[in-house]
Image 1 (spheres, rainbow, N blue to C red):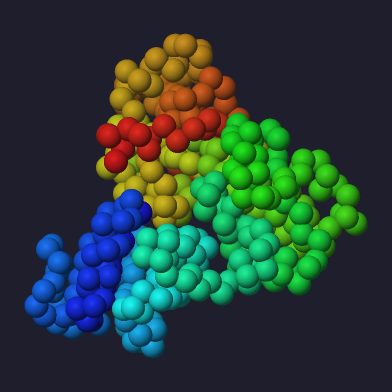
Image 2 (cartoon, one colour; image 1 turned 180 degrees about the vertical axis):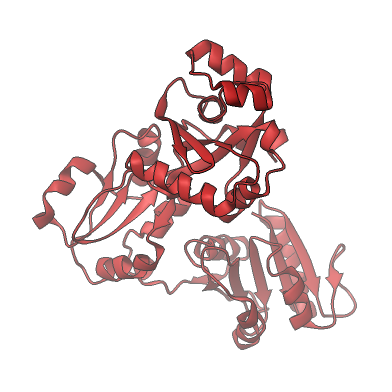
Length: 363
C-alpha cells in the first residue's frame, strides 16, 4: 500500500514525518507549510489542485487537517467504493485518526488503525459492522481478493448483519483455494459453513457465499467470487468486443460459472492486435496473455487436442482456444472444450493460482 500524507501546518508536516518514519509502507509527504519542513516533503500551494492530481495515484490519502476541508476537496473525485482510495483524516496534534472514505474495500479502516498506532492517536471508525464487532462480507472480500456479486446488494446484506438477522457465511469446498479461505476466515473470527447447508433455506435470512458457481437462492444473498477461470479465446479477424464478450458470457453460463470468476483471458500471439479482443479484456478488467505457436502446439501434442485445418492454415497452429485456456490455467483438463460462437471460439480451464502476478512479463 502506497500512501500520501497531506498537511497544511508545520505541526502537521512534522506529524507526517513521524508517520513516514514509523509506518512499514511507502509514504510521500506533501505540505502547504513554509520553513522547517522535513526532507523530501513536496510543497504545494493549492490543496484542491493537488488532490485532483494525486487522488487516484495512491492507495491511501492521510490528511492532517480539519475534516470539513477534506470533505470538500475529495468530494468532486469520489466515484465508487470499489476504486476510491482510502481516506483518513487526522488533527495536527495527533489525537484522533478518522476513517473517512472507503473503510472496508479501500482499506481506510485498517489504515486508520495503523496510523493511530504509529503516532499514538485514537482511531475513529464508524462503519456499523465494525462498531458492532460483526463480520463484514466486504472485509472478507478484500482479505481473500474476491469479487462481490451483486455489488449493489452488499449494503442490504450488511444491514441484515447489523440488524441481528441470521446471515451465515458459506464456502464451496470444491474450490482449489478452499483451505486458504478457511484459514483467513478463522483469523478474522468468521465461521464458514459448507455450501451444502444452503439447501436448508429456513435456517437463514440472508447468505454470503464463497463460490464461482451460479446458484439459485430465493433469500437475500451476495456471492464472493474467487478468480478461478482461464478463458481461451480464438476469433476471426475483426470480431467485435460485443461478439467476444457475449461469447465469453455464454460460455461461462454454459458451465454454470460466474463471469465474475474469470481470472485471465488467453489467446494466440497472432491475435495480440485484435481490437475487439483487447477491448473485451479491458472492459472486463482482466489480464490477457498471448501465447506463441510453439507454446500452443506443446499443449496440442501433450493433451491431444483436436485440430482445425482452417486455423492451422490461417495462423500456423491448429488449436487456439483450448490450448490457450490450458496454458493460462496451468491446467491439465478443460471445464469447457472448444465451443463455437459467431466469429469466436471459447474454451475454459480452471486456474489454481494467479501465476501472472509474479511474472515480470505480465507486470
